[in-house]
Image (cartoon, rainbow, N blue to C red):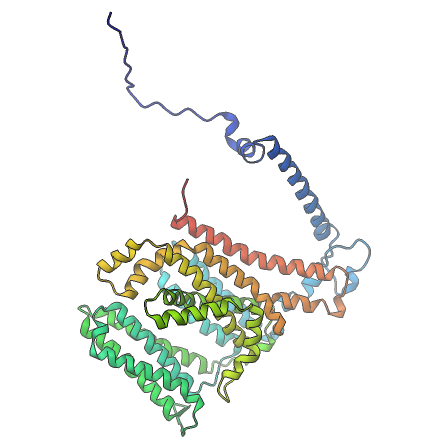
Length: 496
């Protein structure tokens, strides 16, 4: 007997069934997240009780029994008095500006406004003109900030000016090699390397030698520093000539003039007279010092960390050894020790007649310290790039710097965004250590307020520390959330 088998062929796709009602909506999410099992339910209830207890205590201390207005400590004395927010209101401007002259504080506010105006557009992905915005933020803004906060009119020696142009020559040579694959084998380029090396060595050696001095364009020069300047300009000219002779399209070679223009802008900004009153850095304090130290450390440690990470993976033994020594030295020294070294030992290595104020020495120490940690974070990203990416770049006949700039570094930096931001957050919090060497950052300014006889009360220290903690948390939380936003936008996380 033949078996009868019925066949069914669906004429259309079946629509998926809706999820159970008890698994959707707010109640479903709460059930899955907090009440999935009896143990989860018990832990959730205990946590809610603990949160309610702590929150009610903070609300009672910070709002219900707090004092918001008052002229002195008398307002915050008495039984059952909570937070003394009147102390924060009375000394708020000192927490922001330190001892910066009152009539000149508009300059600090202008710097804060410029920072927000330049930072917000570069942080929003869809805002156009990113390259111009980056140039203004990372190159123009620091110089404008320096002039506004200090008053400008710095006295630069011929050796300092020659060193600036020597560094511009080095950058020009690197850019030339990056845009032209035939530049490194050019005879003009080899002469350019020699002139750039001569310029750097002569500029560094000039302060230590006593030579005949003369004036040119209101600047004091000696024979060695003026020779360094001429050698630097000659190296820049040879790099541009090499690019023009080796490139089929001449337009990219015009971009090599930007380092020279940047050096001219740097010297003219620092030495120019803009009619601003001079404000010494020992009058700075509060949030101003915190932001100056943190933003300077972040801005300098990031590019230096990239160079150190590339140097540690270099095939040249000397470069790799120097990078390893630098990184391991700074990673093995506590930041407090670095601050003391920058304050007391760095002047010992400077030539006679050359001095750096305390804040500038701290900026140098913090930047070098953070660069060592940043280098290791970026090196982790470089090691995570598959070998095929390097081989593909080599197959396209890209130069080393073209390969790193266009293929390797964008991927490596994207992979280590959490580590980079974590280093930035740690650096921002570590700025509070500068109070140990006498600089009044935000936390230092708050702690100095505790000794003010007009505001000595039992609740003043707790109120000030809560205010400082919330201020630091606000900045760090903002950096953390922006990091998460960038990770999601670049879609480099694991998707489930």
